[in-house]
Amino acid sequence: MEIGRSAFTDLPVSDTTAARRTPELFEEVAPADEAGRPGTPSSRPLRSAEVRARRRAGIAYDEVPEDLAGTVVEPGDVGFAKVRSTYLRGGDPGLVLRPGSVPEVVSALAFARRHRHVPLGVRSGGHGISGRSTNDGGLVIDVGRLDEITVLDESARLVRIGPGARWRDVATALQPYGWALSSGDYGGVGVGGLATAGGIGFLNREHGLTIDHLRAVEMVLADGAVVRASETENSELFWGVRGAGANLGIAVAFEFVVDEVDEVGWAQLSFQVSDPAAYLEAFGRVAMAAPRETTPFLILGNGVAHMMAMVGSADPDVIIDQLQPFAEIAPLVQQQVVIAPYAAVMNMFPESPHNGRGEPVSRSALVHKITPAFAAASADLINSGAAYWYQIRTVGGAVSDVAADATAYAHRDANFSLTAMGVNAQRLDRWFEPVRRQSDGLYLSFESDRSPERITDAFPPATLRRLRRLKAQVDPHNLFQDNFNITPSTSRSVS
Image (cartoon, rainbow, N blue to C red; front, top):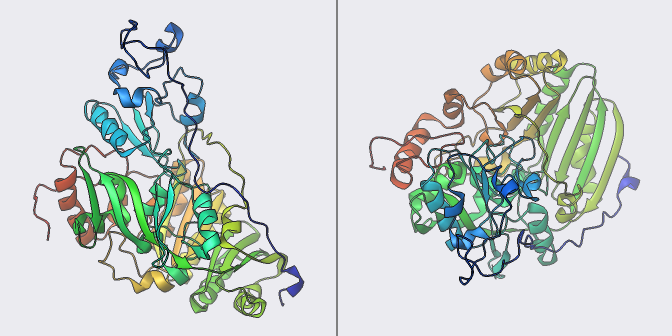
């Protein structure tokens, strides 16, 4: 069955401003000192007794540093509903700190060090599936205001990006230059989380992970030190940031070398699927044989499969030729294929506020090949109804060109990344465990199970040992632990 050429149309690109700054929640208050006495200029808002009554125990609200006081959000504030939760997880933090500069990030971490007894979450975009960038009664350091996007060297395609920028805005800013940076599958995600975890996106088979384009990162460490890491400066930290950055500090700026990317082919295809296991095996064979210019993502349900794929070409014949083998796996019931700028794909979904509820239940697996055993276990999971979301992302290609020990993201031989989501953790685990037994690791960005075993699944033994030694150097007291925590090694030497 051939994909109709008439489906190719132009997809408009949003003219959203590339680099936005979030309006300040509070305006400057009339001069007063911390006790409310007139005569001392201060940016601290005056909060009513009703608002102060909603403060959480154990947090010294009146000791928030002066440079942060005007933008913090407390539980009783009007703006709290917009910052309490993440994309999937409901939260009720005791205080959200919103630094707008590197010195303010240093101040925020100093405040956090004085509050080690409460949880600490760090947030860029708040879209992380694990939901660890919010908590109950603790602190959240939200770097969303650090959202600048700057071209440092046009000839070298070197771009500086703040952790709070959203990938939709990055794509829009790069489009006039004919550039793009592989950045997940949804433009509303913040740069900071993706750029420190890996970055599996629609360009990765051709251009590699997001972290493979990183040339330098500026970070604030647990002790407040501001450092720059690259291949020649703090190289061990630079290695660790690319895959385990959430454990090592707060990134305040990234420098990327981006790719020249013209218009791309963008396809959304739906199939009738009577046998999920057989379909998965066939999809796996076709995907591994596909040219690396094509990166398909698959969402498989009971009786239907939906595939989204990007082809790194603006030639209709090339796009059709590379998609045709996928169209022949099962009856095609719906299709949309367009030629569009990468920025159009990143802007296709509207921005929406994060209003998560409860705890997300998500499981992840990386596999080298979709074997009959993996496909059968996956089909059982899908048919059980325990997972309302089953997605396979293709990896491999350029991702596998990088040596396994070059970055903390070590599973370079994986060709597929699976995410399964459910409502009940016990029920999902019952059906997911047979799938996990067929896997070769996991990608932490799509995992919500915080069992210690998940750390060993995510990082091979040599990688984990090296990360623990690095952790002992940059965060010996384990300030950054309310995530998938890598505990510091007792040995301080790093090989």
